[in-house]
Amino acid sequence: MSKKKPGTPSNTIALNKKAKHEYHIEERFEAGLALLGWEVKSLRAGKAQLVDAYVLLKDGEAWLLGAHITPLNTASTHVIADPTRTRKLLLHAKEIAKIVGKVNQTGHTCIPLALYWKKNKVKCEIALVKGKKQFDKRATEKERDWNRQKQRIMRENTV
Image (cartoon, rainbow, N blue to C red; front, side, top):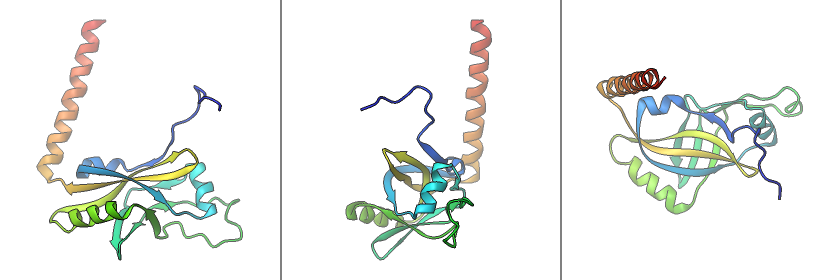
């Protein structure tokens, strides 16, 4: 087996950066994703967005809604490609039951955090989250700014 080369890119395809700002992340799960051929080719090219995506739990199954995978012109010539189609998430029944139990509680929801490669499969990291209030968002931003300022001060003092 060949070792990973030092110049190889990251396994991450798409991140939902907005999620950490909008929600308190409580629990994470790794789910497989049922995709079509043109979608896999687009993901290899890095053409995916998770900004307004969410997970719908229905009839004991999990579905990814709102994820946008832009079709490549060369890959989807013979198929009518729908970039925002509903995609099935592949999870164990126990995991789905756990998520459904939490989502039925007040204030919990399930959202995708990232799409990434694991060996030759596309995986979706989903999370159980609780919405942040406005003052929580401001406090998080203030703490981030303070940490950045501390790092800057430490750098200036060591040089």
